[in-house]
Amino acid sequence: MAQASEKLVAIIEPAVSALGFELLGVEYVPQGRHSLLRIYIDHEDGITVDDCGDVSHQVSAVLDVEDPIRGEYTLEVSSPGLDRPLFTLAHYERFNGHLAEVKVHAPVNGRRKYKGRILGVEGDEVVLEVDGDEYRLAIANIDKANLIHEW
Image (cartoon, rainbow, N blue to C red; front, side):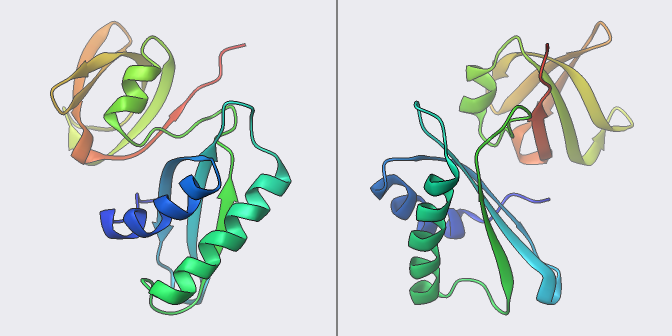
């Protein structure tokens, strides 16, 4: 799953904000007729199925007018859930100290998958502690990241 382009996010964000929700992130996976556009939204009071439906309706209308995606795709609107996705440096700062699973585009120290505790953000890098070692991952190299729920 890849993060969507800044242009696509710029089209979607105002429609989500107008309904009073925070746009956490957008993923777009082009796969011909089975392409997927997934939008993650949040609100301090939580997200309901009706909220997802309202955002889906609003965003669909905007996307129909702007037409930024060629071909057919499925639109999904989702709450972040327990395995909340992380898209921005601000997300990593907000969840400093939490466990996360991170996959990178290009290997760092021979690895593409990391599972560890978020230690913070320095410049444009996310700092993770994995098995007692510290890793610095450039935000531009992160393909996908999710929190790991701790019971």
